[in-house]
Length: 554
Image (spheres, one colour):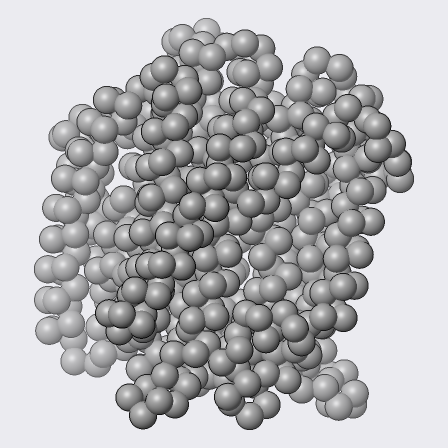
């Protein structure tokens, strides 16, 4: 096996570790949303909670899976590979100290100006009595989560660079468990004595869940030789390089999240035929995007987390052919995993949403509206995932400017699309989801073309050939799933029982169909995935197990 092929298989094995851990995180995340759906439904209270959570949580998506990793990992990996662990630890301490100061100050400012932030992002809340004030209060409670998630993101980046993928990928699981567990504990014990309502108690749980997320990774950091010690040296070349890339990286990775915030602004002001503001669009979009996060985290984020350290090492060692091969095969794997997932979500989304969320205050109408949003979001799933890989690929080449410019353009495109689809076409919250998907596909395509132009080639023909085969197999799978779903709903009288049957039968049937068709169409990525999962130790002549292979989920 060639070095590049072996490196690609190693990336997929690493992604498999991350994917297994992320699957647990996504399941616990769904449980968290199920609890919230049962407690608050999809009305004014949950809309306010979501906005209060989304403002500080924006940095979670930017840092944990984006800007901080994109700027920090290439520099940290270079220090670790060429200057040793001591220099790398010094750089880590400098970055952590800077985060504590800068993000800490931002947290204080955010709490002081929460009213202005809520008004900026959701002015429509003021039309519903009590909704605006509740959103402001919850935003202030949850703002410290911003600092905690920034520190957790740096810990994740360090462990990934040290070939430790399972532990950081499980950190979100502990956040989900902690936020729900602590929130319910406070809500049903201390809150009544303190005069605190249940939704505020759940907001406190979010902050405590963030503490648990950081604490979970601390022992692994110490085992790798990294323990925090305050350091200040603004002239340090590594720190200066990271911060020179961090600003553009934040903008480059902000596109999807800023677009979601823009769409929240639109969603908060959607009205009915009588001109009254509707309670629910913000919640419907959030529940739908939560479902999209399952395949996006399992496949897109997992492959991105494993790919970035690998291509950063390739660039540091001058192995550009290895860089191209690893990146191209990661993109091929993204297409293999996300295109059929998108088809499945669009066809079976209503059954899945009904099974998971339609309990307590979450109504049939909410299920129907959330399913429409999910189908629209699914259109852009491959674009979301590909962007997670392509954007950091530029940072490995010390290019922060190109992704930043693409992001700026994409945000402008999203604003225009949102105005056109919501106010022009009258598609409501579905139009907002479609706008986000269109921008994700646009960003991925432009980033790929620009990167290919810079590198000279990027195995574009092989990627296109695989994409055509995967699309054909996914279309056939979709027909099978649609037929199965309709038959089950016709045979089973109870709507909820039919949905359970649909999820239990149609998803496995679709998966089997897709795999068999991909094997018949000779999709190369299927063999790569199988080889990576089973291991290729025999072909490598019994080579010692790498750090990636040593990593476990324990």
